[in-house]
Length: 415
Image (tube, rainbow, N blue to C red; front, side, top):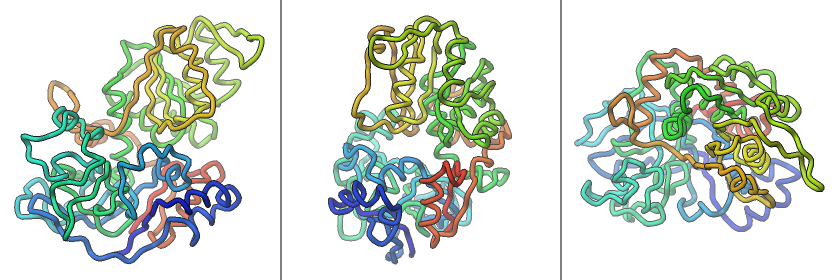
């Protein structure tokens, strides 16, 4: 099969930090760790596994960060390389193991890419503490080889399909997944809606774990897929209070409104004015940026995760406000944490998905997101702005990385 592979190495890291600043060809071209590879067809490792023919694989902002080595190296021990990339996966079942009953051949499915103790081959009575809670996105065995074998070796370490040497991701033609990771997709959902179930589930997980209290206003920072998905998740779960979205470009602002934002502001002066409208007053310290007191937002979803967005979140939060960090926060050169203690702020991270309590039942986030899409009919498919065949992966990566120029929100590859 063919697949877009990525290999982490010190030379590629040094290249990314030097030539990559000048030319994206150094990152996505022949000199990078990314290339199209011819690989052996993967074989089902056991009777509980499913072979999936990929229909579409999304490009995530975290993929761009990892390919450019701008993400923190802290997560590198929880991957294995070279890996076929792509953790946002839509496909059709190609074959199933003898124990599989959840899906059948030819059925359209999406894949939870996070690797649990079950996927690693551990028996149900021996999960880690995270997996025992249904929160396999923080599986504590991610840095260890599994007990199930792939070919002649045990399953390699890794947290997720798409950054795993033995489990190819959605930027290839074929994916292997344990039955527990696979979820049927209703025919009523378009491919462009269904390929978004993974990022929609990330946002939904964050909202379900930290929902608004009553109808307090929610401020969503960011204009990418996760930010737009967070707006959708707030409305889909029944929140009727005001949602202020921060988005710079016109098409992103339009998408935010379509998915449920009450109002949209651009970063900078418009966002500042919105903060002042909450009753905040501005003050200028002897050195440093402007600070505010009073007013503020009681709930902020930071869907960017860089130094600027987190600094804004800390400055815009009301006393005892809650900040949910959904963006992949990494290393910062400088960040003033004064208001964490001065305003008694509560900061909570959110990653992945898992078992949620929803309408009195324990269900997987993917299942809830799928059913909410059917219930609401929200036009999430409009987030998919660019699609490329697999052999044009370099063009796809450039469009995703240079989204300010290309206008891309979600870019997908179609093997």
